[in-house]
Image (cartoon, rainbow, N blue to C red; front, side, top):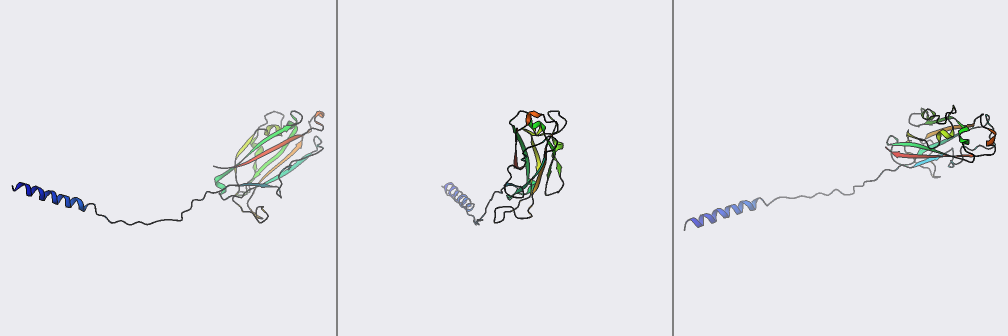
Length: 201
């Protein structure tokens, strides 16, 4: 008879001890208004004005005498810093007469980053694939030049153009009609397309 109350007492004490471990204090704090906003990159180009088409247009070319320089100004009107971006250029040519682009000599091609102000000679990155002794538009056809520095972000003014004095990189190229061009190219045309692309690295 004395054994039963002893067992009940021990059980009751264990129950109270277990119940004590369930009690705890709680406190909740809230952090709100957190905004995660993606950066932007927006390539903008102009030639001392908003129009960049037909920058290298030459009519009535004469072999050995015709030459045309041109410049494109490249802006980043996004928000991402230049050291996170790269520019690449892809070239394509279309000729009304086959191989006319192999006589359109590229006399110079430079890319000048605003950040350093030091021109990069892009011709040193191009090979004379048709072995005619000089770099021409045919050598550029299908070529992509990458890993070029991109300009730092800049903003637009009320006219929709980059604010005067904004950071921009310059692409300069000069093309001439080589003196060795044969008579068969009279009246023919070569169209050059350049695609500029800005990427996050």
